[in-house]
Length: 349
Image (cartoon, rainbow, N blue to C red; front, side):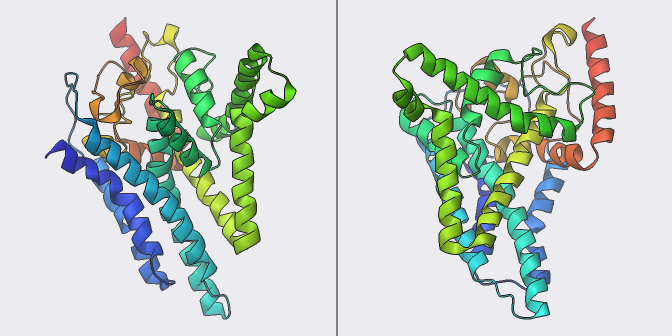
């Protein structure tokens, strides 16, 4: 399949969310039916053909930049449509309440998933770009899920300390996802704040200029302003659902971070820096994210030019299946991952 055409698969979740939200409240069975694309994606990821190691590519930027901007546009449109949709739900009768609650659950499911795919993953691509406007768009996308500090923590922390005990994002072998989630939710913010403080202290421009120039504070203030505006203009329920979709998207992201580097400490795993996933389907829907080793070797390589490398322990499934596995049956995941890692380490002896 043509790489440009196949890359349009990344539009599945934002387009599904847009179509769901671009109408009035759905009946309960109809609303639940709108989750079908997710389950089809899960099945496709389970059965996905494997990627093969590739040589370095040099694709034209125009189409793929347009795809990124289109996904970013859909992210902001979907959030606006979500607020409108929620504001039009009715709560007069018992039947109305039941139908509206089911619609809210589907909204959270669809928009949360879309916000991870068309929000955070697009942001991850853009914050590594060289052009200031692209990096700012990446930050705005992160603000749409109340996670702007991730840009600082990821670039200055994760990329600098990958594969070492100092990397917040690397999950320890005995660390459950629940414990990992509690840890990184706090430590990513604190690390980003300390990084910004050190950067600004070196400039010695005074308290006021340092405060205004603090990227973490900028993001936090914008996020609070957005939530406050939604609450003031559209009510508590819309503000809560905005935060809920952000929570859902960020939790999905951190599940990816969890399994991408689970247990990989340099001196113990022969310098493996990421788990390998050869899912062709995951790679297309997630803008090259499974080519994570290549990304860490050179973070400036654009997603369409990332190549698949095999030097690392291999996941048995693609990113969508593994994400669900990590969150729903974490003990089973850790048992399997420990066996895979032990086998990989023995092969390296």
